[in-house]
Length: 300
Image (cartoon, rainbow, N blue to C red):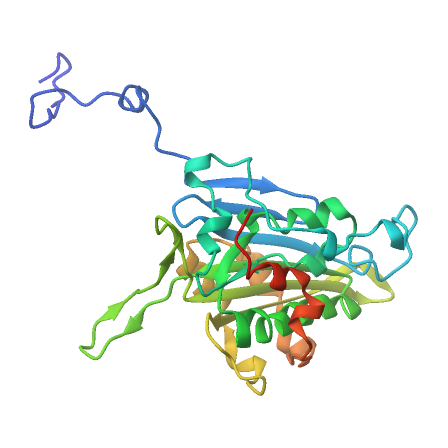
């Protein structure tokens, strides 16, 4: 008992627990993630999984170079993906960094969480989308190079009907029920040594706003929606709306809070204010994405 009569609980060794500062005297395990602020996006990097925990973007016609605004860079000053290359993010500690060698012959594409096409405002902005801290392993044919690209294009297309579009991209690890009835999370790990986790799913969560009426330009109509896609081949004919998922389900699975309760309460579902349909655009991936050709050679 203390002089004041309060009980004091000792540890099994008989040592009285100390304050947090003393416990962390020789090292602090954190942070769990690194906040990365770039020209075209902000991201939270997961050191354990070695890919983004989430990325966030703010898309407008101006940011995509689709409108003439004062001070906007001329067309010849915008980013060109043929001048970009995948590079390791040296701002991160080397031991927690994704490395080029990790993806070599892995069977997966280096999938952009923030698409290069969303960062055309400058070459620097586009180059930052090629940092491996913006990359996660994705199935190539049928997903990263096709259906996922259609979804990215749909997000950009929202700027045609909404003044501001906010896009969150979130890698997920979702459970699957096995034949024995139990639910398990199983995922591949790539690299040498194996250290980059391969997400089972990816989420695109959007919040789009626009003036509710010409007479009330300061009052905005807000639309939100979440879509969860498996990291697998998805047929072109798959309906985009089949991937609709409650925002709350994504938040719960990712351990994130994306929108406040107030925003959720006043927003409409995005599929009720615009068409939730992707445009299928098949093209020669090698010609459209030169880095796909580079991916078959050993990293420098």
